Length: 124
Image (tube, rainbow, N blue to C red; front, side):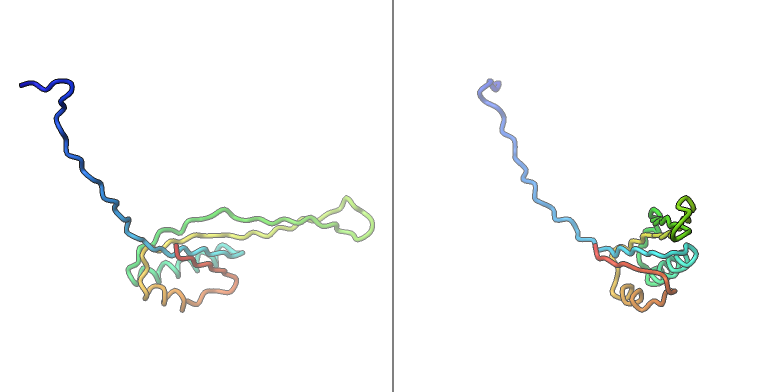
């Protein structure tokens, strides 16, 4: 007996369960400094500390250098065409540490870095 157009073979419907993604935590560290040599030393120190505790480190990723410029008159009253220009460069790096353990976080908080280095730490 052949199936007619009205009779169709029945297929099983497979229900797809929603699979919850595994929550990955990561520390996102942004390091900023005016001098790139001091910045590179600090980043190396952070990466060595994370590697000591077998953490997965991504980076350092160099971010664009922020340049602030100012133009100032050389003279106070006359000679308006004579001007000086100054600039300040802020170098930045980004480091991600994936699934950090408590020991890694504690070691990073106890880290002594050179003055002039700013660190922003976020949990993503």
